[in-house]
Image (tube, rainbow, N blue to C red; front, top):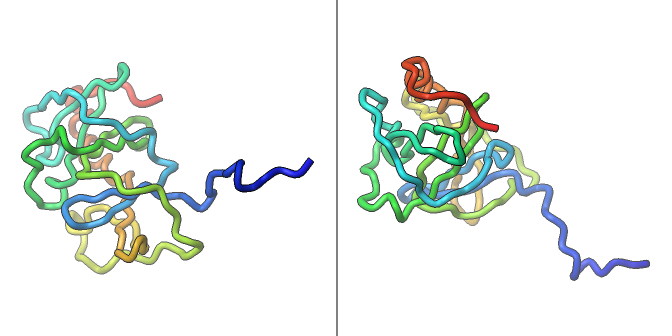
Length: 166
């Protein structure tokens, strides 16, 4: 029995990145690190947290730290965060919420390798850029989600977070 390819679309195995915008710049994270994309949740601010960690939220029983990527990248926060999206990513044994301006697409690199990031200096200046690819005619910076652990570790060490992500 022959299957009609047009009627039974298969997911594209090359779609390995979730693209999003912060300001006028396109970014992406590996889809394997993404748990889900959600509308903004109720946010509880934490005193003495790094400025990019804007608080914590309760997501299905998990208390997750939330990082505003606009602040992380030196931009002003959106005046109305309710218009943003949150990408929940797995980092080691926990979830971290990333506030982005908008989610763009799920895409792949079309077989091309992710190129090394541009030389931006060391330490904090690199902002966790894993590499660069092109999508829809624009450069897209692929983020290393493991670098967000550096931001939230002090909060966990202070006992303000419990548990992780399942």
